[in-house]
Image (cartoon, rainbow, N blue to C red; front, top):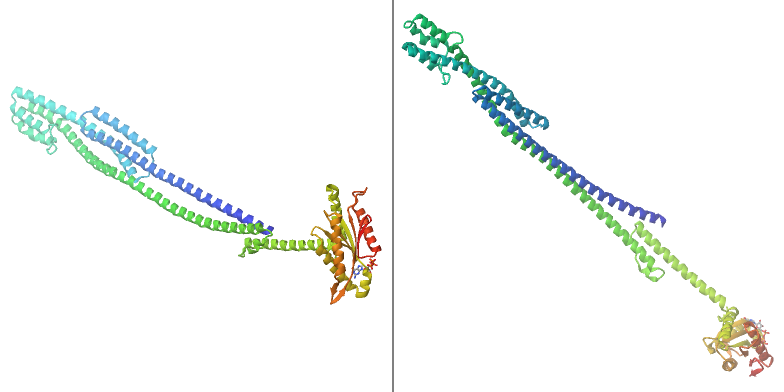
Amino acid sequence: MPRLKHKLNLRVVIMTITLTIMTGVVGMSAIASLNELKEDYQRVKDDHFDSLLEITQLKVQTNKILAATNNMFLATNDEDLEWENVYITDKANVVAETSEKYPNNLYSYQELLSLTMTLSSQSDVISAAMMKKITLFEQVLSDYKSIEQYRKETLEQGKIQTTLALDNVLLLFNPLLDTSSLETDSSAIEAIISPLKLTISTQAFEELSTLLIGPSSIAEDYQAYSAQLAVVDALKAEHKELTQSIITVMGDSALSAQKVFLTNLTKVEEKISIRESFLYLLLLTSLVVAIILITLQTNLLRKIGLIRQVIDAGDSQEQYRIAVKGSDDMSEMAKQVKGYIQTIQEKNKAISDNNKELQHLVTHDDLTNIYNRRYFEINMAQEHIRYLRYKEPYCLAMLNIDSFKLINERFGHNLGDKVILDFTLRVDNQMRQTDVFARLSGENFILLMPRTDQSNALILMERIRSEINAMPTVVNDRKIGFTVSIGLMQVQEIEELEDACKQMTFVQQALEEAKNTGRNKVCCYRNETLS
Ligand SMILES: Nc1nc2c(ncn2[C@@H]2O[C@H](COP(=O)(O)OP(=O)(O)OP(=O)(O)O)[C@@H](O)[C@H]2O)c(=O)[nH]1
């Protein structure tokens, strides 16, 4: 039993621990997974918005640089250029700072950043080229104005041919007109003024030549200016190409960010799906284990209930009807308990039977099965106490079969026993239920009659005596007649009131009187004798 109890405790403990651990694992896993997925999702979202913000900032700055570089091509003075230059440098710094603040692995972003930085450095070249162009333009314009002045003078002096030649030169080298398609070197001027060599004075021709072809003349300056225009045009083309690339990458950058976002989001979704399957699996496993454990627990409780039922049934016959089936340890325990209880019941019954038998042996006479001296004396003592308390009289009668020795001698000891037995049965038939009839020894008997006075007791004694006298005992078809002598007394008021034994001596005396005065008679104590 202790072994089974130990197993039972262990099983309950294991079940409880298992259920607790399972619940904990499922709960913790679910919370951990949920938190991790939330963090993943938040990170992807933050990254995406950071990317978008970064790209937007870069785009804004890049567009500003683009606008500024475009403005450079339109600049007509140093101040404009300087202003745009400062603006571009400022924006380029912002771009550099932004890229440091938000390092990003987006390909398009990196490309756009690189292009923007290229654009920024290109703006320096554009600025320098435009500066040179403006300087040269001013130089050409100055030359142009000098020629205009000279033309005005020749016109006023009436030097018509020179004036016309200067008109052609001014037409050819007008910096305000687009003359890129014309010949703009000194040979073109020479071709215009050479016819004048014949018509104007040599001094005037040399003066004209110096003005138009000499060092730092309009031809030379205009040539440098034209070359610078070509440089600016090349830069414009380069800038246009860069602008186109930037516009393309700007468009791609948003798509690229979107693509990265979707890729990362898909990864998170896949993770969610895997975690979801895992959690469902975990939940299902827990459910199955919980069902198994609950089934075991229920089975256990049912078995415990059965044991309780067996115990509750106790020593009643009910428990024999309780069926205990199964071969597990709990069923074995129930069977053992049932077995123990049945054994205890059987032993209890045997002890009880033995006790009854012992009680009977202690209080009854072997031969006659009526009470013995011991039982009588106990009852006599109690009755005397009752008498002392309530003063209700009782009577004692001592009965002795007459000349029994002769009966034994004549019929044998066995038949003598039969006579004794028959005598007790006949007395028993006559007396009351409340009377106590006992065998004191041999053929000597005593009868205690509670709540009975002497006159009534005498009637009964006389009836017994006459009935014995009238009817012989029949044994094996042999009739054995015998008589009985009876001493009778009502409880006596004596000095030693509490002495019940003393009463016995009075009834003894009455019997002796009956014997001594002829037998087959009833004698009452205090000289009153009836026959
Ligand atoms: N059969 C039988 N005889 C017993 C038993 N107990 C005692 N006796 C006999 O009963 C006889 C009693 O004899 P006594 O004491 O002389 O008395 P009695 O012969 O009856 O003579 P009175 O009493 O004077 O009439 C003895 O012979 C005992 O052996 C018994 O249990 N069975």
